[in-house]
Structure formats: C-alpha cells, structure tokens
Amino acid sequence: MTTPPVTTVTRTNRGATIAVCATDQGLPVEIRVDRQELRYGAAALADEIMRLCRQATLEAGALRREELAEAGIATDVLDRLGLPTRDQVVTQETHFEERETAPTSWLRPV
Image (cartoon, rainbow, N blue to C red; front, side, top):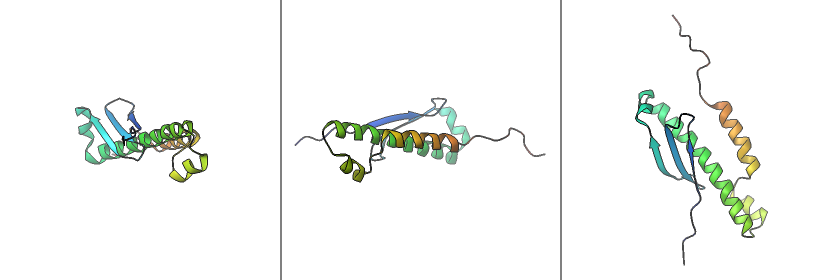
C-alpha cells in the first residue's frame, strides 16, 4: 500500500521575511524566518507564523478538496471531511486581511 501524497501550501508575509508551509490538516512542515523579523519579539513572530499557518492550511484544504472531487468523491463526503471550498478560502482571506495587525497611528503619546 502506498501513502497518498500530502497536499501542502506555502504562505509568506508581505515582506517575504516569514514563510510557512503547512498541510491541509494544519501541520506546519517548514518555517523560514529572516533574521530581521527577530527584532519584533517572540509574541509578534508567533502570531505571524500562526496566521500564515492558518492561511496555508485553508489553501491546502481547498486544493485537497479539488483533488478528491476530481477523483470522484461526492460533495457531501468532502463537506463532512471539513475541507473548505474555494469560496470559503476567499472569504477567510478577506477576514485575515481585515484583522491583520498594523498600527492605526505612528504617533506616540507624550
């Protein structure tokens, strides 16, 4: 019996300084961090890695769904497996972009 290939997707942040490759089950299989990201601290780095992992997982899940659908698996079975549709991925991407952390002002209190 052969092991089926694992569906993975790599996501990077805007500056391409952090990259996370994750499976459709949410398992990160590769994480690359540019040294300059370390200056923001562990909490900020962990948040960004987790965000990218969630995005990669969603995309990989949609790809896996498409692969299984092409192989003849019924839609209701794919739904029960919890694999997202392409539309669900787009909706979540929009949600992630809205929640992306950025300062609302560069001014600091004096």
